[in-house]
Image 1 (cartoon, protein in one colour):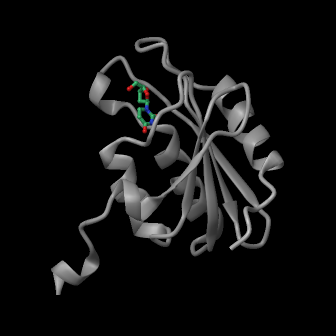
Image 2 (cartoon, rainbow, N blue to C red; image 1 turned 90 degrees about the vertical axis):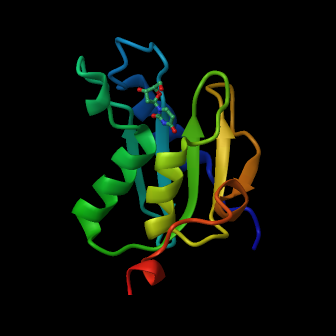
Length: 133
Ligand code: THU
């Protein structure tokens, strides 16, 4: 698959990052999910003074997509952090619930789009619904 045009998606992740609520870690994260139909769904991290209540940017974006569309077809995920970072293990598991193993995840900084790594490379052995049968 050719690399999708991700300029809008990158800008959505950057804009979401500006809204991050990160007064404790000061580590702001923006995420934007590009869907196959061109729709972009963004999210940011939302921290809580009870630290365990914190929600990562990737999960915010995924939950938004579920709430808005129910089912959806993801094409790419763009993250914006400084420095560039891979998603945490918990987010990878949640991403794997809704996205194909080939999903490219672009680890970016505010300076521009970064390199992509496929979800299946970051989480080669996700827990899956087959285990619940
Ligand atoms: N964070 C994310 O938003 N996504 C990740 O994949 C890793 C971590 C957030 C959670 C917390 O607000 C801050 O980054 C530091 O861990």
